[in-house]
Image (cartoon, rainbow, N blue to C red; front, side, top):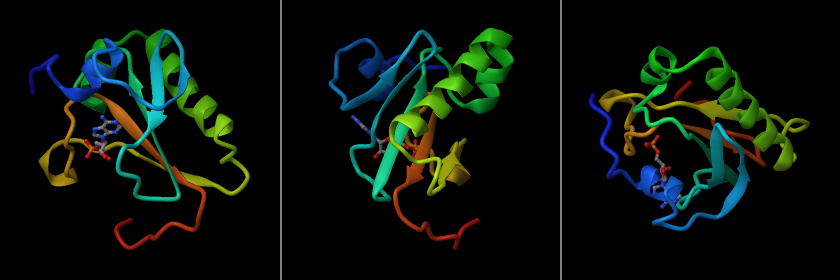
Length: 118
Ligand code: AMP
């Protein structure tokens, strides 16, 4: 899928739409999901203009990939999630129900999570 910069997360990166920010660096921006599906539900979006995980890996340098991955871990730490545990979800494409075509990972935690679809 071709990247379309009109998506809501691209607008958040450009500051056109507000977000409840948790963490930001050169590679990623983390904020709370607007419709939480767990007690703690954060999103970590890449600063790169890419649709999904495969698009990101194909079009990013090793530094960019590492920077994004480290931002995910940093966000989980800020949210105090490592001890209790948490789940990372990358939706990709129609079967996953991906709504926003800009790379993001869901961080879900703060409570015992259902395993019904894993
Ligand atoms: P996905 O289905 O993986 O594309 O997930 C997109 C997520 O973005 C959903 O969980 C939405 O609740 C969330 N979302 C959509 N718009 C916003 C927004 N403006 N701020 C925060 N989260 C959002």
